[in-house]
Length: 212
Length: 212
DNA sequence: CCATCATTAAAACACATGATTCAATCAATC
DNA sequence: GATTGATTGAATCATGTGTTTTAATGATGG
Image 1 (cartoon, rainbow over the protein chains, first blue to last red):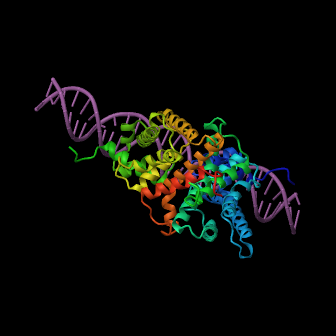
Image 2: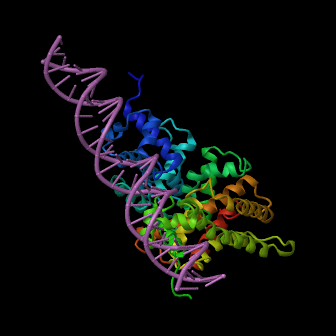
């Protein structure tokens, strides 16, 4: 029974690729149904509307990532232990890079899709994502404050914001750097990429502490 | 003779605001001509096409910024002097935040527009921008390599990429953080904002050197 | 086999898009 | 003041958009 893909999954997979490549604003229903080799009406039949299809994709990908982030953070703070900054940053970023499981997209496409989900429609994300999103924000700021009590809250929030920028930009435009530099930047695997970002942001969070 | 604004500038100013708020993909000709209180045909008459209007705006803003970046970098490397990392980062970022001169947009809108110009159509930027863009990339990588000769080139390129992400995300979504945190992050002026980013990235570039 | 349901297909829907036409208007120059 | 060139205005173009409709098809259970 695993032979033929259902229309619904055809639409989902095709849409995921198109969204990753072109973004949420630039993909039309025809683009989708053509790529999925499916009738125009199928999208509205199976998903209700184009917008709901997009929301479903966002939820399918962002929700598990946020769950994983919370799980990792909890693991680092078990028994009331104070998580270290490095652990917090890892819990914040890693899930975006390791949850490639679900679809058969290439790594690069998956990263781009995650980046789009985060960035493209900042502001009005689907209702189903809001509560968990708030929880993530709160949990991580609390953990950060516990880890670095000397850091003024404002500074901390902005540095978390910068960290977000590092991650989002790498997800979305990491491939652009490779093209631009014609490989001079190397082709780090996920783990190296992740450690590179964590190193950078970890040091950034400790700016003004010692050393320079 | 300074009394009445010409149709062309009406279109330009209206378009700038719309692009800053909604991005390059989501602004229609009607949106523009309505906001500018101008006839539909005016855009095609004065600019040739919607696309060329967008390109003109991009060039109007990005070119002077890139010039300023190069100028600042040259100033820091005058007489063959080796620029310090901090100076390089400042030359890389400051022009985006200080070139608010041209239009009467609010700071926030101007930042967003700059962010969109950088991010939205990464990949296929207007031909008029390509040569200067390449020059900026090259000059800054050379300067960085001179400033931090011990840093592997690949690591350096990725850290410059991260720096770019910090800046772009702050330009585009700095206001989102303020809303989200309801002011808990403070409301730093341009100078403080800039120093905050430079501190973060400076430390990030020195990750693995000393301290932690 | 038939009836019933879910699914698919083709066509049309109303509306938005960027671009163009052509006459009306305006300003400057001879 | 008439003429010329640039600019504007209203209407229209062909095409693309998301959605809906209606009929055909498919599979499933009585």
